[in-house]
Amino acid sequence: MNVIVGNKLKQLRKSKDMSQEQLADCLRISQSAYARIERGEGTSWASYANKICEFFQITPGELVTKDIGQNKETTNNLNEAFIINKLSDKIVEQYEARIKELKKTIKDLKRKQKP
Image 1 (tube, rainbow, N blue to C red):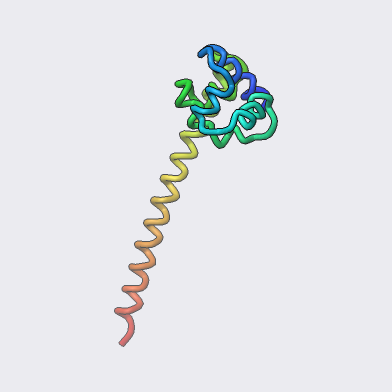
Image 2: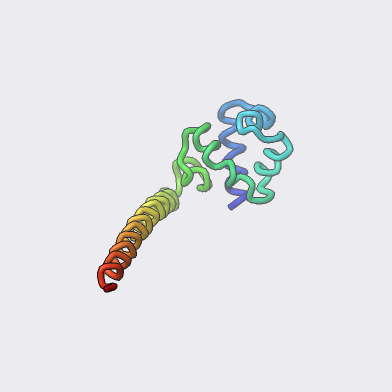
């Protein structure tokens, strides 16, 4: 996937007629760090995914697909996974709040039982 993202970044950068140094400045990283990302070395691109997507006005799914506009299934799957993750977090928060309420109720009931 690192190579796919690197190739996509190179394609996007060239479409904006930018140098590696110019894009690295926009992302606030060194040119050498950006060059490593573009070559597909390591996973440091993930740390900058939001900035990259915002800069190029693309979705995270589009960032990790081979060609812009292709592989819609992968894009949809990634977007669905993102939504499911957000919903799961919300459900966990709701359950944690309910557990807190129930613990308080149990504590109050125990207090009332004591003579």
